Amino acid sequence: AMGKLTIVLRHGFAGESVAVQIDDRPVLVRDGVRTRLQIDRADAREVALADPTRRVRIRVSVAGESATLDVDPAQTPAVTVDWSDGRVVLAAGADVHDA
Image (cartoon, one colour):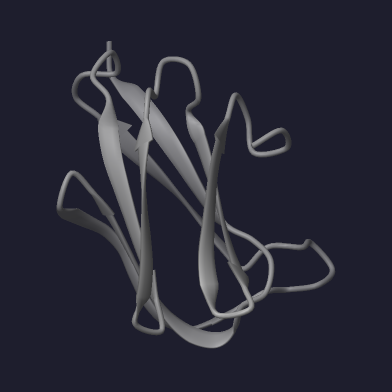
């Protein structure tokens, strides 16, 4: 069965460039990312994974700053990305609300 990982760009974006990679594969590259306050998110992407049991490394770059997070998609198939005081903050959870 295919697995999937949901990546949600959430708080603090105000026009930055964002690039998301999973195991060095680009899955989201976007300029001018802005948090929409009504829904408290800026963007989201669902990524299909060939092997949902294998851990993956997520790397997110925002405006030249980056962070990485190793994720077990079977346990935590949702990853949130916040941009806070010039830092990329990544968290993983069972769904986007508890990440």
